[in-house]
Length: 179
Image 1 (tube, rainbow, N blue to C red):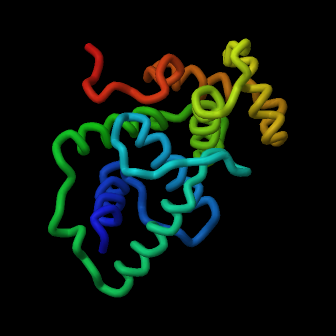
Image 2 (image 1 turned 180 degrees about the vertical axis):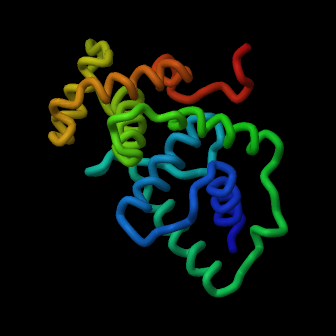
């Protein structure tokens, strides 16, 4: 196992995400949770681009499949390692982004809304005269993902969560928690 694969496994364990790649939804959850986890300052080196279901990183998918294969083959390098104290803290912080999801959206939709709204607000190209407020970002989301048309209230809940944790104001959270 490479050091990055070991770190990936340790972070997945720390955020409570199984390394299950059997379905598209399993892979989507890993993609979105790792995208959101990196927003806490936990830089795993994965760089995301826009895809049909929001932020996506091909390298993360490749690492996850290689890691799962190595575990099936009996490699257990990750069992003798542990995350640094700061990485454990940031992993725990990450779960507050998507944890306590509201009733309504499925877990997959909740994760996709959180990650997609953040990406559209902070990463996507916007002309300089755009405000990037909720209405503009939601309109961009619906343009890209028509299935979210008519689900503005769910998107509003995701926007509010991002705002609550500081990810509307900032692209990435500061490593030291605010008091």
